[in-house]
Image (cartoon, rainbow, N blue to C red; front, side, top):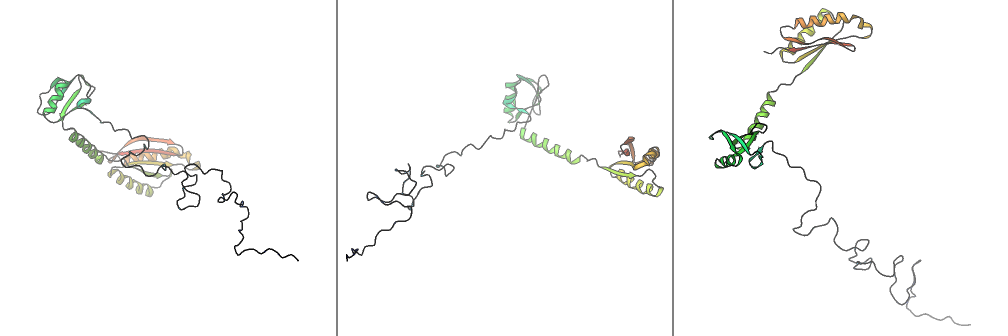
Length: 249
């Protein structure tokens, strides 16, 4: 019987399923790759410094910018807020009427008016552009704007908000309920609020609209010392309304 040839102690190389056998003595090439490596790849896949997928190893968009470079344009800039008045070189008139303290009021060529303001270390401000010629004032422009803002803020603080208080009646309100609501209306008018009184007609009670009108006129008459009728009784849908505003003290 023939004896089988004996192998040396070196183990026979094994291959994984699906991996091609090495040909030509080179290193096995991964499946799915073309004959040449991707352009720009510095190392083999799986190396210690493998590049990002795709093999691109250049400058990364959106990454760190070189020192001293300007940031990219991020969108439209906000429009510059225009000045409420034309000042100094922005005044387009050839001659202006100059007013102000420590100056001789009169009509001057624009260049002379600018020179007058410059000598006083102040600004030439066009305060009435529609006049003929335009009226300009020599003053400190920043201080002028501050005073205007302060004055406007004070006016808003002093302005009283109109408050309207509503009082509801039925077409057949009894005297007790009427007097109770009359006292409320008196206190509302004394505090400066308007009173909106109305009679609500529910269902067939609309037949008593004349009775509701009489009730509202009586109500206005009883408040005559504190308020005046701003709107006579008027029917709006199912409500007949009267408006009474407080009298000025």
